[in-house]
Every structure is written in structure tokens, then in C-alpha cells.
Image 1 (cartoon, one colour):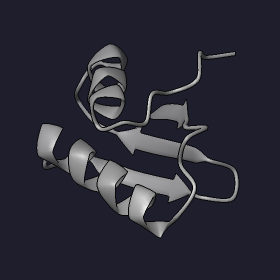
Image 2 (cartoon, rainbow, N blue to C red):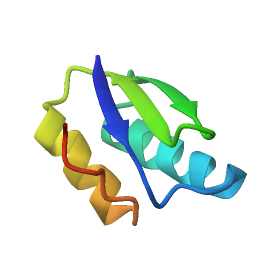
Image 3 (tube, rainbow, N blue to C red):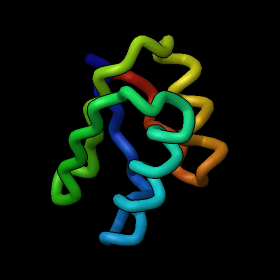
Amino acid sequence: MHKFTLPDMSCGHCVAAITEALKDADPHARVEIDLPTKTAQVDSAQARDSLAHVLAEAGYPPAPAA
């Protein structure tokens, strides 16, 4: 399970765009998004760096991991 903080995510449209981008990259991914905390948890066979690239390409670059 990969957890990302997405500071640019602000609305339901963002949630839909992020979910779609991740599902396009891995149709079998399980995506859980928490809009109030601006986090996404992704259960995927894809590498974390690959998923981070997908998010950045969709316009939602993840914050650096703490």
C-alpha cells in the first residue's frame, strides 16, 4: 500500500481525476482517497515512483514523503 499526500487536491473533480489516472495506470489498483486530509492510499503492484509520476502527470504531484 502506497500513501501519497496530494496538496493540490481540493474537490470532488480532483478525486475523480486522480482515481481515473491511477486506474488507467493499473486497472487492478485499489484507490482510497481522503479529501479532507488530501491523502490517497493506493494498493497496486506498480512501483511507488511510477504511481507518483502518474499523479504528477495528472496535475497532482505528491508532496515529498516525510
